[in-house]
Image 1 (cartoon, rainbow, N blue to C red):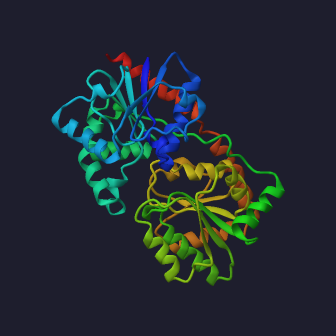
Image 2: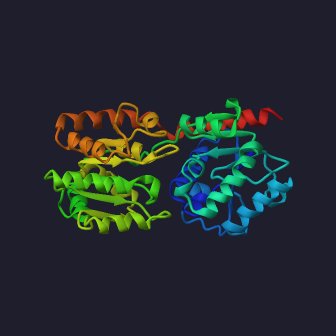
Image 3: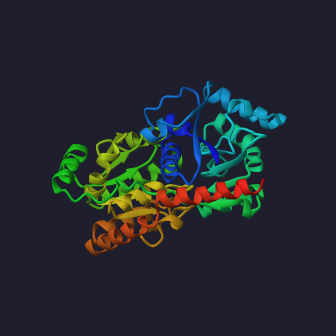
Length: 378
């Protein structure tokens, strides 16, 4: 089979979507399975973010930036026009972000990461919300097969768009094997000095945007400080959208000295930070998958996370689950973890075992099976 896979989110470095597209494609290419892959992208095709294996793939390139390409795709769906001329001949086109060009000569596979725009419209930029509200029904209806990254995402898709369950296959994401427990005490100490100025800290990793619920985490830290705990909160992640209220809240509540915004942290530094933290706390209001939770577990950090959306499904019994809207409940869970060495050890052990169940090798293998089923329906 000839498969065109959209690497645009990887090339444009779109945080979680980019990691998904890049890592899945790397494992698909490595496994081979008799398939030939084509790297598709819109906008500027710079391959700095791609591995050598992906740089070596033949390319298909649409020289349009995101906004005109997205609008062109939506209009083509609305008018019933195929965009095959923009792509080389392929048996399958795999849309790895929420953008599926209508094609008449190729089967299509669409990865659905989440329906945040529909469930939490207030947390999306207006133009992006408008586009997805109008375009997503076309994408889901037109795709020959849909990959959902969790059972939660599959349920949301069925309930919101009345899709047939058999059209959707749940394929979990994997954990980067480079993320493993850091046992070098010098590296751990160095991370604590470099990032936390020797102080004990709680850790959070993700893009800064409203649904990540960082404001509630800051308020939980205020409760801890009122109880006499002098922990800091370190937040690793780039700015997403609608992030300014989070920064304003930290300043308004006088927590600027207690909260450190680290921006992007290299993957190589994460294991030491996970090892150095007292707990990884992730009170997100909604996650299609919730990869940061698994990454923290894979590095041996005790995890506290939200009991909403896909997070209970992904975390299993390896994390303390809390109501993300309950500041007191978040604070109480943190106090439990920092005050109980046995609980921390139990969460670390369970987390390592849980994270080991998720691999990109399996994700690629199951994705290849979807490709074969789709082609078999010709």
